[in-house]
Length: 289
Image (cartoon, rainbow, N blue to C red; front, side, top):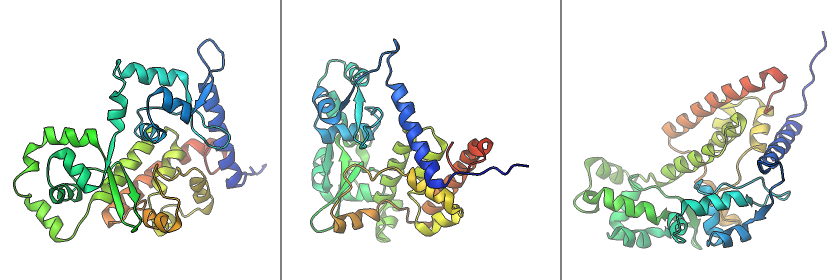
């Protein structure tokens, strides 16, 4: 009986990424069979009346779908997608910009809600408001970003929370110096990434990147599979700092912390890997097919 030889995991991961690019290139073909030209971020942002940062946020939120990336990894966009987004704005040029508008820090966010900074901070720390991103300032402190549209919706939906005393549950959390902002942001970030792919190995890689290294090794004892998951890991989120000192602070935000949160991601990863391995079983390879 001939023994099946499997390729090194690094090669399998590279083949998987090449295949994804080829599939994306096929998706950029119009119904009449002609290739559709893809445009870069700067031009796409200009056509949508956005800055490049606002376009990146729109992609993060799933409002604008990026096409297959350029060879160097730069985002590109199909003109049909830009036309779809413009049509969804229904003739309101500022509609998309309002969807992605962010405010940074408690003072600015509190002004949108019409409350004081201390009340806003309490609401955010207790998990009633979820950040959409972060910055690390010059003092290496985390500055959370919030969608202005979500703050306005919260004010309309929960006027009672903008005044009066905190609930007993909130007071207990604050007394314990708890802060749910990193956790709620991670949940949002992972959810957005999972919605952008249906590939089981890529989904497993999203879940794997949230786990601390020791927990990841426990959930994925096979080194070859860990190499594959690392190769498919999503890039750092938009706004992640490049300066080493600031990046070190931000790295702590990317990993699950509380035991129950770690358990949830580990269980989810193990479930995702069961499906991914089942997809690959027919090929005789460990890793994406």
